[in-house]
Image (cartoon, rainbow, N blue to C red):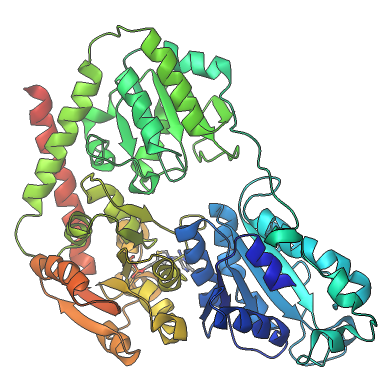
Length: 578
Ligand SMILES: Cc1ncc(C[n+]2csc(CCOP(=O)(O)OP(=O)(O)O)c2C)c(N)n1
């Protein structure tokens, strides 16, 4: 009943981990998958399975139930639940449980699973052991579990179904339900006619933009600024507003709005005195904050109205600067403000936008020049990778330096989508998420860029049966430890040995050998052309799991960043003078 109702609710994929208590669910999922009615992905490790399901949801927008056995298996899902909660990704975690009589008496593999994920779930159901008396509620629970994960009363996120099963765990439904007589179970558990779902979720109509805010935006002058992060809504609407107002768009790659014309080098630009002093008269902030602390701090320092717009009313502004916090569909707000702004034409000249554009062009040229040549560097890898991805590709950028290097050094371009687990910024589950994204991307290329620690953390995901059939390119930036910590004050304030032991954490593990051990096709990248070549060649070599390892120097990396920042600053000073 559960699996049938999930399908009616639009579920196309499910994730399963081996275990005994979940047997009724595993059998139902397997039967469905064997009929070709569902894709079933089998993983060994529940932590990986949770992130894999998250990746499927990132790619499809739909929740994929992830089914585990009881005990610590259920706790392994917690990191993915937290990420899904903070990033508003639909996730349906289904933990098999022991029946009530097995609790608190030392029964094996029995832990308290009710409420396990605390306040991180949008909805949780504990319907108890399946019995005929409660059978009339099953379809509703199944249907609602998908609807709530997709954003029932509020926003998308995790839902927890904790399902207790009493033995026998195999057998016919009638036997499990007991002596119902007269085919009653079938009647009680029948679905709606013509495969309709039990519940149909009707999300609120488009959240209209408040008139005062539309007026505020439309009435502002030339020196407006649009800052777009992950979750900014439709790039077309955002760019429509930019066209109507002339306001520059500072776009994080995760916003989907970092198209040609966007200001991509904002982090480096705002490190230069000339740009830092510019004073916008209004800032429209859409989506989540960037990784760039420089941008966040600059926004905090501004003395102008800032409007934060979020579809779900999330106060995503660590600087607490926005005076206006607007719960609206960003696309609707941008579209309305664009119409109102156009009606007020003509606007003053475009010197503000022109200045930003000149600075951006100078920055991009300076970055090109500084990264010219074949040598591998972490910024160079991020820039070359983004530039060489084919149209339609998805790039998953790991937390730590990869997401920053892509945000800071990649040139704006069209045709790709960049995603990242930035809800809770973990470096766990990155490979698993990528495997999930890749499993749902029919034919389109998926590439994950991650550090060696993130790779080793989640390398076990590569042992999963689900990773055998996937088409995924993994680019490991192997700097033998945690490169990000070299940028933090502890790198210089702590004794060198202590810093290395606690933060640098060199491990000497051979990432290539690890990947090879899991059966991946491996290649060491020796220079930037070999990276471009490997990304290009991946399409020719057909489906499969490829792991490319680029060895870089963690200590030299800080200096590479400093050099790039100086190069941008010099070029921008010159460009703005002329
Ligand atoms: C699950 C989790 N544990 C620890 C951290 C803290 N942390 C942030 S970055 C980082 C180092 C990551 O190293 P690597 O993946 O090699 O990337 P690099 O810093 O070299 O770019 C760590 C341990 C985290 N974000 N998430």
